[in-house]
Length: 346
Image (cartoon, rainbow, N blue to C red; front, side, top):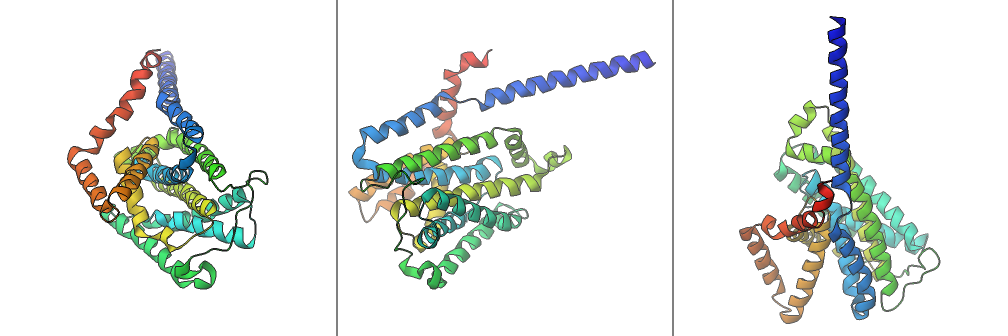
C-alpha cells in the first residue's frame, strides 16, 4: 500500500513538473518580442530623420499612444471600461506644470512626480470600479473625470482656472538636453518615455499577473475559485494604468509649456477609446497603431474640412462598428505568427 502511494505521489509530482515546464515554455513564447514591435520602434527613430518638419504631430502621436496603451492595460486585459481615464491624464498634466513652475524645472522629475500623483488618485478611486456592471463603471469613471475638470476650473488660484496654467518653462532633460524650437528633443523625449512605458506594461501584461487579469476578465467567479485575488489584481492594474496616463499628461504639459482645463475634457476620454477601437485591445500595441491612424486622419480631415471633420470621425467609428474591429485588427495578430512560425514549432 505504501509502495502504491509512493508511486502515485511520484507520478503526480512528475505530472506537475511537466505541466509547469509546458506553462513556462508557453509564457516564454507569448512574451517574446514580435517582429512588428521591432518595426514600430525602428520607424519611430527613422521618423526623426525622415520627417524633421513633422515633429509636433509626431510628438502628439507619441503622447496619445502612451495614454492609449495605459488604458489598454485595464480595458484589454482586465476588461474594465472607463470613461474617466482623462482624470489621471489631466492630473498628471497639472502636477507637471505646477512642479515646473514652483519647484523643479527638470522634466524627468516632474514626469515621475506626475505619475506618482496620478497613481495615488487611481489607487484611491479604484474601489469605485470593483462593484457593479460595465454601465455602472462607465458612469462612475465619467463622474470622476467631470469632477476633476470642475475642481481644476474652480481652483483658479492654483490651476489658473479657465485661462490655464502658464508662465513656466521646462528645463533641460536630465540637465543636459534642452528643448528646441523645432520640437526634435521633445519628440525623442516622448518616444523614449513611450518605449520605456510600453516595455514595462508589456512585461506586466505578458506575465502571470497579466494572465490572471485575462482570467478575471473572462470569468471572475471561476478565477476566484482557483484562488486568483481578483479585487487586488484589478486595483493594482488600475493604479499602474493611472501612473502611465499621468505621465502622458505630463509629457503634454512639458512639450507645450502650457496646461488648461482641456486636458480634463470629456473628449479626451472619448478620443482614447476611439483609438483603441481603431487599433484593437489586448496586446498594447493597438494603442500605438490606433494613435497613429487616428491622429493622421484627424489632421488630414481638419485640413480638408475644418468645420466638419468630426462628422467624418464619427462616420469612421460607425463603419468600424458595422465591419467589426476584430476583422480590421486581425492582421496585427496574424503578422507576427506568420513571421515567427518557425520559432513556434521549436
